[in-house]
Image (cartoon, rainbow, N blue to C red; front, side, top):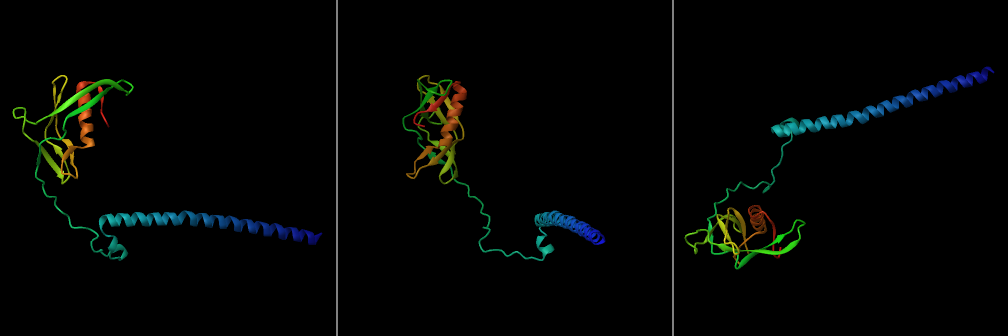
Amino acid sequence: MARRREDVDWYVEMSETLERRDRRRKWIVLGIAVSVPLVLMGTFVVAVELDRRGKFEQWFGIARRKLKGSKPDPVTPMALEPVTVEQFQPGDIIFSQLDRNGFVTSISHFFRELGPDADNADAPFAVNRTDADNGTIVLYRLRNVGTGEVFEFRGVAVKRLISGDWVISEAGHKQIRDQLQARMRVQIRRIGK
């Protein structure tokens, strides 16, 4: 009986020792799992702050090498001369009227391009270029063929084709359509687009 009691005491004692080790091991793993990310995050925050202030190299003793051609010299854009264009749209610009559901109706609105100067019909359009192939029309005018009403648009986006001709870009047509819709108080869509 004494032997059995001694074995049971030894077993209980060993079991408690293993449980304590297991709890300590869990706390150690938990401590490492929490402290390592905190240390890494703190180091990252300090490095970002030092880099923002320009002192990263001093703190870590690192010299950054500059790669050849990695940062081009700043180029000042040259001012592009305005261009004159005789016409952008040969023929009529046709817009179909839409119903409330956005379906095309049988009503069409025809617009014809007018020169920018009301007194001189042969005056060309002036285009302020943003780069070699893009720009905006200073003043663009359209006349509603049916009503005779004249609509003026400023800053209409244009682009140059490979052939060298200047045409109104999709963004320019959208701008014209939006302004016409607002002024005519109907929904319209350009034929063929």
